[in-house]
Length: 291
Image (cartoon, rainbow, N blue to C red; front, side, top):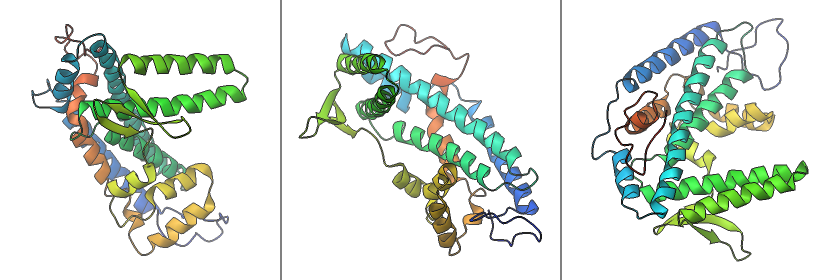
């Protein structure tokens, strides 16, 4: 996005910031170059090393006595599916953004919405698969997100008059986490606020706005607010971000995808477990992966 003037005779679009042709072409080429570089790098990933986060997690889960070990292995496999889906989702939206940003007439909102999808996938992966966190904390974070999404689904089911299905889902998730010996943390009112796994504590969710701010260059003001404002039709959010951006370099948002490169570096140790056609020599372990 730029602060260029609107073309003469162009229709007025409140809070819309036009994209000029030169910027659009450069942005598309930059996105394509980074995408191809990342994809090529990850396509050559082999078996994980013994000290990789994946191997460390495997060792931790496999050392846990049954039946808890088997249950945690199942939860860990679900997290690995999230890793694969996060990568595929981000990649699909980057490809779509490459084409969308150069179409005529120049788009305004759709590139921001697509960028938001990429950002959310990267931040979710970053939250669950930080290399520095332990396997128990990773499981606690996954359990919190699962419970949070289950609560959302339950509330929607009640609105639709499907209380029975909502109750079944809640029972299923509660049972699955109990089998993993994942202990809920509760407020004074009894509401679940997070989970504990082997002493590691996690909340139900993470602050995505704060995480986006910490993950992106500090000269990008309100990164998540800008993208969410475009996605949800909140003009006061996009307008504030634009005004703040005049003091920085918001126009370079697509040109310096630092988070994309960080995603690549953190994804690499997990890529082997999520790619199609991987080896299955670990099939005798509690933690295994199916194509």
